Image 1 (cartoon, protein in one colour):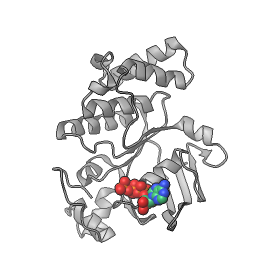
Image 2 (cartoon, rainbow, N blue to C red):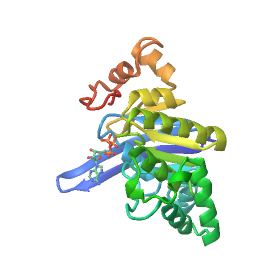
Image 3 (tube, rainbow, N blue to C red):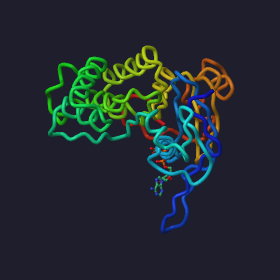
Image 4 (cartoon, rainbow, N blue to C red):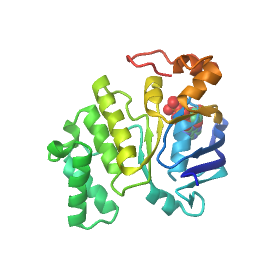
Amino acid sequence: MPIISTAGLARTFQTKRGPVEAVRVIDLTVREGEILGFLGPNGAGKTTTLRMLTTLLAPTGGAATVAGCDLATDPAGVRRACGYVAQSGGVDPQITVREELITQGRLYRLTKAQAAERAEELARDLGLTDLLDRKAGALSGGQRRRLDIAMALTHRPKVLFLDEPTTGLDPASRADLWALIRRLRDEHGTTVFLTTHYLDEADALSDRLVIVDQGVVVAEGTPTALKLAHGGSIDASLQDTFLAITGRGPVPADAAPVAV
Ligand SMILES: Nc1ncnc2c1ncn2[C@@H]1O[C@H](COP(=O)(O)OP(=O)(O)OP(=O)(O)O)[C@@H](O)[C@H]1O
């Protein structure tokens, strides 16, 4: 059974200017232990889909299950199964890494002793041990992201949703985060569902890609299969493949990695 399955998932926002169909029809499946890259141009509906799958936003159509729990009838079960790292984390700059992790543990109803122990364990796992007593506001971008991920892993979720996890990071921090994501999957069997605008990242990390455009899935497959089917050969770049699928040019590049 797939760990995530959606059928006709949709979300329309009502605005003063009329309805905005952010997500029109998303049909997808994700296998357990897979790293899925969820790609699409700006405004394609990626974040809206993630927010629905993590129960932060109610769908206006369709259905989905996460780890066997139905989004509509068992949202608490879905929340237990999910960790979510949003585009900008909400940590308090004045409190220490240890306090952040313990507070998160307490939110998941761990006792003080359990929360303190889990904080140490997460810090070890995510390379934050030396930073436990540093204020969150004094962390580098890469360290902050690792803290965001540690917090999302507090309750040992089966699925980790990462929304543009490496945006704004320098190349070394990006490479560290890629290694971390692979390790989570390899050592804990965590399924990772990530969005990114960096095609090199999607290519290097993802077992499979789902490409969305205007709220609809327009292509899916392994990076190699998509290159072959849409880019003309397995040697095609993922950027050319993406352009062939979506017909859209890349966002003007401000950073070194190729972004779409
Ligand atoms: N709360 C909202 N109210 C109205 N429209 C919204 C709302 N949230 C998102 N949208 C619109 O829905 C569409 C999809 O947005 P979404 O943030 O899901 O796209 P995205 O693929 O994550 O984009 P990006 O790559 O730029 O982060 C966009 O047109 C966006 O403006």
